[in-house]
Length: 314
Image (cartoon, rainbow, N blue to C red; front, top):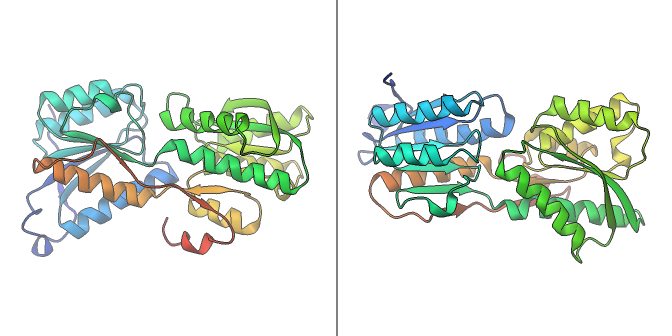
């Protein structure tokens, strides 16, 4: 089995004696993603602060490759493993691989299907997705109501259908629609996946526009797809300011779009905070300390009134 060379992410002379010998293996679903880049950098930054040895690998959105990375980390006798899973429905094998080697494991950002049965030396660090789509949808409802609408036709852009966050965020939309807090009766014209991708979302919305159906808003499971929707509207000669578009994550691009008036709503998911929290949990587990099975970093609605609080955070 291939062994892994670890890089000391902080100068040895500055490393804390209590962490200097700690080795953490990190497997990210993919590097080519704006939000996950911030998450990854959060882990690395915390590692530098603590003088922890960290190796971060790109699973390239391949479940099999990610499982192999976990097995390789275990064979290299790391002190703990952090995983941002490619497929949240395929995490039991990862849990089993880490358990077999008695290596602590922390899932980050994407909730594993087996989260409620994780062993004592495993944990999950993220934000509670029951809040993300809820905050986003309520804000879209508020904006539609402010336009005097009683009924509104909307499109919903979903993330990867194998991903728990996408499933939950879409569920949030339906729950707000069915509840008393919207104030506008929403009708979904179509609900399709764009796999978290800006380009795929642009193509999807371009197709929707080609049908000629009128719509009042677009609710997207993340900011990248929301920006793709904005690009599609602009390419079709339509002003996105006239059609509320919502996303989740509060990425830098999304915050710029919000300031420009093109994006109507986003929800701050503290990617860097999740990364730091995951590393903190991994270190504690590696030392035999107890960690809550689920550690949540709160979501926060971002508006023009409070955007200044978030620009430097993400």
